[in-house]
Length: 258
Length: 307
Length: 69
Image 1 (cartoon, rainbow over the protein chains, first blue to last red):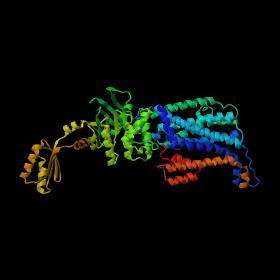
Image 2: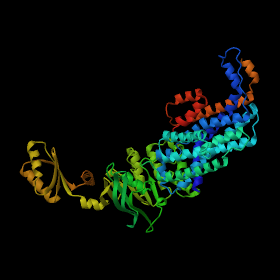
Image 3: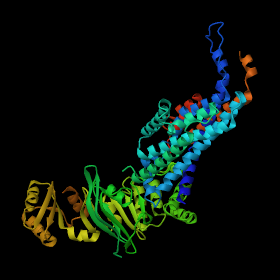
Image 4: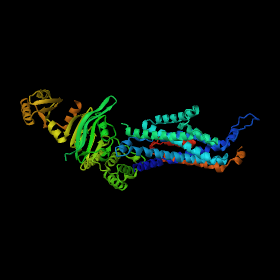
């Protein structure tokens, strides 16, 4: 019952701060841009000039699946940055401003409070990514070439899981420390390290949540099963559950800044 | 109505090495109004935060007794107003009260009724439709009072409710408190004695994390007030000399002299004033004014704080 | 050169992107207009939103808004 109350407040806040408008919009634009840029890359290079006479540019036209994978790459950098930055103060902000003192002196459940923040964040992430990915897919099909539907859906779901993980990590950091810059730095750094580690040490990080973006890309580009996908998905969900529990504990521990 | 509502025993708070609250014990009777009085940095806010459940005590116990027995979770029975209440600036006053009411466990219909009533009571009926981001300090304080009271708590806990307000805001909030205390037990912290005297009947003086003096205002006034004579004489040499000499008379227990004025703490006001006047006449000293009375709480407060 | 490109540019697909960008900038400006307080002067944010493309608006929403949380 309290969850609904908290959730309604979070949704209202995200609406009034225009988050429900600008985050999906930016994700959609990010998704659409990659196929457009790829399609016109030869023309752009040509018009940039400075090419020695007689030299012809021969760029192998990428396949639809490749372009979609590149779009996911965009979300891994700019998309992730936007998500972390827009959610970094989701808990610490209320503690810093002092409004949490009034909330937590009331008979509220820390679980509901945290769950509402978590759920509202995941729903914004899901809607934004789904919209952007669908846009990217549509534009890719229109401008580049067809993409295997099954692979695209699977890749999208695994990638969404990765974004959920990054969001849960940000939420936890926000409950743990106060400075916004610190929260963003640690969350982004950890996400970046995790995904880079699975590139360097694939043997040891086969099931790490950081391998999820890689798994998505593999799925798109090779028709075969990606290795360790199920394990990575399960482990990611487990990590999210642990982060969520840790967040509840931190919220209860640090009710106010005094 | 002397049943205790709040019972605090050996309450302690340590931050790292520093002990900010040093095992204080007190109780607040049902229906009373108690002031936690002390200078800045005495540990008032820390104590209040522990009472409101925002801060985990390092030691000791806090019990809220409802119908004579302690409750496991005291949050449903208390209303709390922080020192500088902060709200969601994007909400309207009305929305925040509704939200606070429902968080406190009211059904949405009850919350709507209480919201309308409290907005009216704290004088924010029209402002309630506007965003809190545009409220003044006094309006926020009044909205803070309304959110603390919306679920009709048994105990209202306020942290320095009027310190940050301008005189007119201060008067508004004090007269509101005056009304609230008819129905609710109130505990508030302040560093201004005058605010405590205006609405409270119990006083807990706190200094460096310890209770220095506690009791009902009347009792303290009676027990600690001493007969005092305030004397003013002319500015001439002879009068000044006489005034300085008066301090050593045997009926004067303490004397503070500055310029042509003196404050004498005496054993008996009547005897002392008669003796003083006779002595003045004998020395041909003109007394400009002589006021016999009692030492004020202010004197006591300063003594407690400074000792 | 524009002529040669025009023939191959699928305007039906590119126009929506431009519209999205416009919407984002307009939402940013509306939010800026309504905001009680911003970090940094408002006129500076107007310039950033108008000239900074997507990033300008995003920067405003993330850094410029004060009452977001």
